[in-house]
Image (cartoon, rainbow, N blue to C red; front, side, top):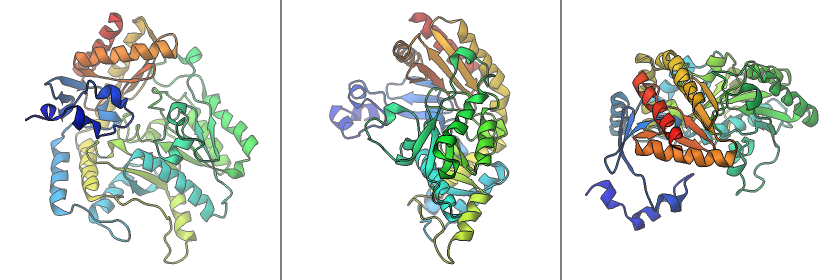
Length: 442
């Protein structure tokens, strides 16, 4: 009996699916049964070109044999070992490998199991850093409108997407939000980084006049805002944020859960923009999506403040997870990094970016397209004259593409694209041609 035959209305009901209209899905379920390379296999035999890398994470393509082999081998040798006062070799090996490709001065890694845990950990590290230095009054966190930092209470409080918050009350006190960077009047259809908008960062200066800089612990931003529809930072914007934070003793956190591990053609967005934060939250591409894993890469200054100011023998940072540095995740992460480096995947992403940009912006001529945003192997295609109309269009585009073997992601009124880094020009053509046909069919 195949997987599809085993599933019926009763067997679907027990699983409460995340970020899903469960009632709608379970009336017409779409069940994935396999994946290889750039393609998913569905239970009815349908093949889907994966235009979203699973969920921003399968950067090396599905089922890479070296990653699969590493997980299998590790499961047979050591399935689990606690990291609480204990250790196993692969976690240390991966931490060293990871810091070797991180921006200079970020030399320490704290492992988590997801991006949500990574952002919450980064925020706690920022608070603990200031506490260790005798500045415990620094408790305010500043995020950004339309930002997404996972679903933990810390990340959700710092994030700026209202629909994700409305069911959960006031969340954490002390969070504030800078303006987002989306400026369609000046920057619509910008290829790559928009030219206008660096001055939007000056809103942070104004906020500091309101709150007093000595009360602010950290500023957290996605270098490229992903889940809100791919918002690219204007030229000079991130540099200005870095300058303001440095001047006021505030830690700058980059949420690179999406942009890390080659999405922008470099190991991290910090490399692409030549802006080094104090903390980088990572996940998704760490293990190619094969085993849950996340982490925070911390600067030497943050690490040393906690190490040097804790009492002898004390736990320097009272935080962690049962599965931090899990053996299978560490094995998958090491193999994934080996694949990225040995097969030149970051370089491939960089080399194919001009073609990706060209094909994305060719959609400007198609009726219904309101804006196109791109950087690296990311793109957002905004639709409609207003959000409600665009949202309806995006759902129709998704359905059309799915029926014709292409998987895209509708986010409100925007089609979001983030394919595996191994995508070819032929597959890029297929992806954007199908989107174009779907728009012309509306």
